[in-house]
View 1 (cartoon, rainbow, N blue to C red):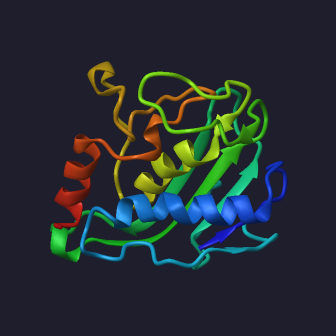
View 2 (cartoon, helix red, strand yellow):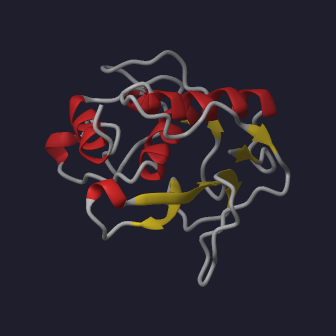
Length: 177
């Protein structure tokens, strides 16, 4: 995978470390190595999700303009209609919004309180978006507001850096442990 630090306001080392950590959160819950353990920086890595876009063979994390209020968006390419053993994820790309969001580290993980509310926690959102890269969708039922794949977040939130039981169960349906 590759991460493009351009427009992020974050250091390359922070982005590499936290992008890799977001992938390891998911890999740690299955016996399969879904994402690998290498991330590099590349200033040409970009989101390939525009109209008519095709995959370019790279899983990419980048920063740019998205509609205000949208935190990030992930596009996934693959074969999804076959029975589970024959499904295949080909590529995913993530675009983090820079229109109205300042990215950073909101502080220690907390289930009960917010960290630094002046930044959107990169790792918190990267874990969620990487879940899309694994093939999971958003959850919008407020009863599940504590799960990583819940479709909303806020500045300062860090609780989605780790997976809830529902996230792990969804992952195991796609990739048995």
